[in-house]
Image 1 (cartoon, rainbow over the protein chains, first blue to last red):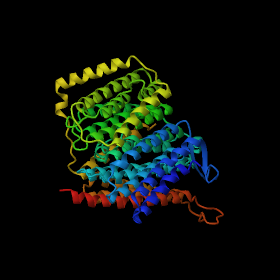
Image 2 (cartoon, rainbow over the protein chains, first blue to last red):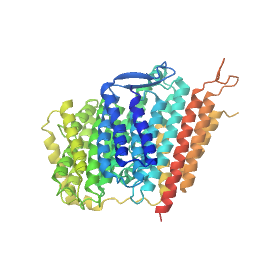
Image 3 (cartoon, rainbow over the protein chains, first blue to last red):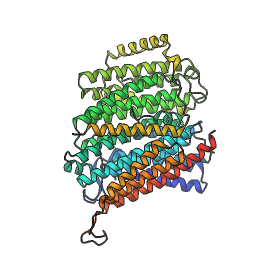
Image 4 (cartoon, rainbow over the protein chains, first blue to last red):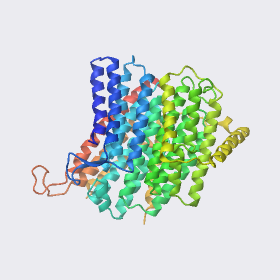
Length: 499
Length: 96
């Protein structure tokens, strides 16, 4: 039954295409969309364990499964996607001819993400991740924003280069071990130069697709220029698929100490780089996009310390609060996204949701962010524990900034379903935190106080006046530079592993 | 003699060079296609071994898996190329 989780969204996606061609009623298209999005939830609640598609032997067949490690990923996917579906029903204009096509792409992305999270072999993981990415490119290009096409193009070319190198690494793994199934690869993998090279190439490619510093160059543009529900999905879910791929990779192949250390350094660098860049942003959605770079650093930190459960729960937590923040900020800032020009002064419910989500992303108890951060730091040594704590503080400073500006401005008319989707996600972060047992920690009050003080200190210094303005001038030049950075990084990882 | 795998890797490197050195969006898409061609050649070379049979009613077959994987990759490649070209057209229409 588990493969049906992927089959339903695909099937209903194609039904929407047919209905749209036959000029069916809008209600019918909406119902098909909701059904395709919701049916996998039912299967997820009833099914468990491993399964071979078609009942072949493990050597020849395709294995899928729901286990301890991927269940949080899937849960996050299903919750956020359901909320985004409700949001997009009132976001898109259904008289527009393009809307039905966008809905099809949403369902394809749903199928791709679920397939990637369920996969237990490398090639199927790649194919489903690619389905999700292709839908993501097209959905970014859907936006009406100026230079959204450039952002989509940059995202497409770089992500595709990373994908091809990832398959190249899969080819090397297949050459060495003779299998693609994760378990069988793990049984047949012995440390060798070829496997080290494959690991390095695959690691660098997945890092690019996950948008982690220093390979994040495409992310802020793509995530901030996309339509609001798409931004929520991109930041909340699409970057999680490569992170899950890294978990598969690290659990199957012998990872050397040098690669582990490199991954930890990259993770910490990503956490702080994301925060610093976010502090300097004036565009609210770009600020959130840089926080994705920072938050993916925590996920990588979990993976690098082989704390896969911690990484999985952090990914779940990030899906919930970052999806919620993008939906809230996107609905508040319909006219302008510049900080200070819009806000929640006349929308108390929205203010309540945004505040809750900001506390959740800062890792304040009893929200789910606190539980996930606790899991991540439980696997860390002394110095890195401090890095996580400082990261929390930085995140809180940055969200103090966001809320400070939001509390000054006013917003236009908000639809009920928009307020509801932010509120549902905010309450879910709280409910999941309580359910998972994140107790109330009094020390968090010190963090919040320190963050507010730091914010006003930085504001007095005039840090936020400067801001970095980065408009894409020439998309070709950008791609050249980012590809060169990617190749350099990959070579560095390869040389690092040289025995 | 250079083996098909080595030739494939060399072609991939040519494509990556194109991505780092060419500014024109169309040329970037072509470079990506070159990378994918090299990749396909690498995989086909992986499965090829002289003297073995075709994998249809075989006695001593070659490994059919890499070739089938490449079929899937080619499909992705075609889809992506058309999408990239469509985005380039839209870029020109909106752009300066």
